[in-house]
Amino acid sequence: MYNLSKLLVAVDSSPYSTNAIKFAIDFGKKFNCIVDALHVVDTMQLEGPFIYDLSGVLGFEPFINFSAELKKTLEEKGRSILQAFSEMAQNENVKFHSFIEVGIIPMTIVETSYEYDMVFIGKKGVNASFERGILGSNIESTIRKIKKPIFVADKNFYDIKNIVVGYDGRDPSKEALDLANVCAQNLHAKIHIVNVKKDEGQILEESDLKITYIKKEKSVADSLIEYTKSLQNPVLLLGAYNKNRLLEMIIGSTTEAILRKECDLPLIIVR
Image (cartoon, rainbow, N blue to C red; front, side, top):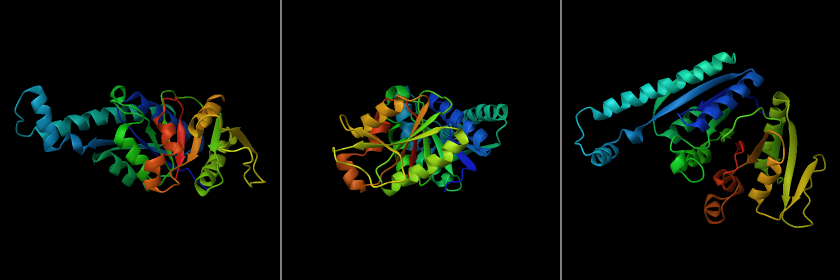
């Protein structure tokens, strides 16, 4: 059984991050729990090769202490972002903390997540207009490595009313259903257990569950998205990456396919 008592939201200056903050604070209110915000100053931006590449583009020689000055500027920007988070949390009377770390973004988020029950993150970052699919390697790497449930916020924030669980009877989907039951109680949301039928005779042996079967006329990802978006204020909850990593690289995964689509749909991913 999941116990959501301490949440972590990874923040940057993107609109997607703002929505991640809003969802995290909403959960904080409804679960009466702590919401901590983390901003990571990316060491990749402080490394020598990046500095020399930047200086070459701008047409000047890198000067002494440039990296230190850049680090200071990035930390100041991070403090400004965290100040905005703090004001939002205070306005909603949510218990919170905020902090800055310097490191590699995915590794720092994953390492910090161990003491939390759920992590919130934006689907895209500050360079969203230049990205295709999800937030490049940072988000994908974070999702693959993190062991805690992760909430991926999209373009819009709303009060969640419906929780759709993609269910195939395997352990990750059972974990997803367990979390859905906990969330539904506190969010006052309705659960929809959905299975995309790959053949006419497919029926899961789950006699105690009311499962909605969708005929597979499109891909599993598109079928789940279409069903979920037909509901008011939904979130899609999935058990993720239950196949061999090499096999996923060859045939892909439903979770990854959904993440890469422009579906404007918040996701909760459970390992």
